[in-house]
Image (cartoon, rainbow, N blue to C red; front, side, top):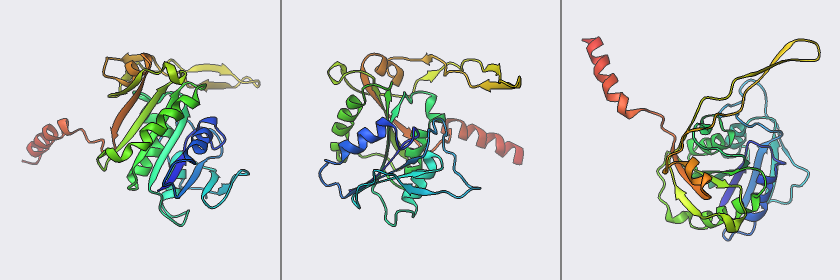
Length: 257
């Protein structure tokens, strides 16, 4: 198997480096390539860089032809697009995005560069997984459980337009209670914009923190993580609202009559 690893925290982030090191020992691993942004690109979503050239440069800790690392002056989606669509000279078999520092649950997936890297892999025909630690301490816990999931992936029959979005509580391994398969919860609206003046007296604005959970019912990712469980949520790439589709078709037919 040939793996492509990416994230939105940057190639230097502890989450991706911990995962990269752990995956080296997996059996049947032919090669593994890390391609990640050269700086933190959190909340970049699915943006692509179209008006400027991208530079994919080897990092100072590049090892050999089997395990390689690159950083890119672009977004997480750029990184995966380069890795799958020709920059490596070969096709990876799977895309893994993470381990992200911070949760990607509920509405977060709309903005998340971590989830976007995985969806880009799926857009380009590769099985893809996004994994996040709901904090920034216990990356060993996220890695431990990811390796268990990864070892059993052959048992899954994922649809061609789905990815797995995994969120791990920021707890020691022994305090994590297990795994729950969940749906996305929903957050309240973000906190208000924070407005200030810069040192020259000009106005500046900061995007406010994400809202707290509005829908954290028992079957949601929020509830699972809050109660010490790993959340695994399958996400569909097809955003079509099929429930509304038929009523719109009837409405449009009347307009055409």
